[in-house]
Length: 258
Ligand SMILES: CC(C)NC(=O)[C@H](Cc1c[nH]c2ccccc12)NC(=O)[C@H](CCCC/N=C(/NCCC(=O)O)S[C@H]1O[C@H](COP(=O)(O)OP(=O)(O)OC[C@H]2O[C@@H](n3cnc4c(N)ncnc43)[C@H](O)[C@@H]2O)[C@@H](O)[C@H]1O)NC(=O)OCc1ccccc1
Ligand SMILES: [Zn+2]
Image 1 (cartoon, helix red, strand yellow):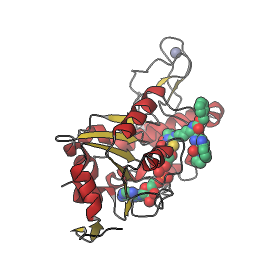
Image 2: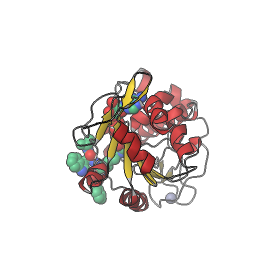
Image 3: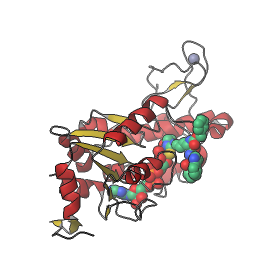
């Protein structure tokens, strides 16, 4: 129940209690999903793809089974996504979070495999589902430093053979977490700590259906920490959060934080 005058920015209303909770917070934890990067032109998982990869269901291709069946297809898909991210820029939402770090403790816990939070200047970022820019050997796990000979190919071709590990010659795989795979322990621990210390939690651009990630904001609510959601559409978390603001990341976050 928002009892005082909300802050109006353009046509979005941010409950005054949400503004107050952020104003009072020393530690702000931000949980982000694909919607955080939508304003940078990166399609979300929900957006029906266009072009070459339109006919692939991300929850099918982002699996160990897809990799076992067709590593060239899966490698090309991630090279293509990495290429899109390289061509994109952080948006006003990413930048607002990075600038907030100047005078508050801000932890970003993201499901995104892009590097737009870091490119905007955020320093405390934990990637629950890995990164497009940390390929590693599918056998010995060594990080792969090689550059993909021809990133352009992944835009044109459906299959690009993954490079081989210089140590054990096994195929190099994308450094992301596939469905059915456990999350990286270090990133998960950092995320749990970020939520444990939070005075307020911002949930930005996520449908809130992928676990165990989606359990983090729920646990914060159980501890009575205010959770403020920014999403142009209702999500699976909307009915639980303290405040749900119907706004995009690129508009809502600057409105709240500036
Ligand atoms: C689909 C779901 C039901 N399935 C799961 O959750 C599964 C299974 C499961 C586990 N526990 C459960 C409990 C219940 C039910 C199911 C499960 N979870 C797993 O498999 C996890 C692993 C899950 C991680 C998978 N990898 C990803 N990504 C990396 C790869 C890649 O990117 O290719 S998940 C991937 O999909 C998810 C997509 O969700 P969102 O980011 O929210 O994006 P979405 O498109 O859905 O929504 C966008 C939102 O933005 C909004 N929006 C749009 N524009 C804007 C805008 N402009 N501004 C703001 N918001 C905007 C939209 O309105 C919308 O709400 C993200 O998490 C993303 O990282 N692993 C595991 O459980 O392993 C076991 C295990 C345990 C121990 C040891 C061994 C094994
Ligand atoms: Zn190897």
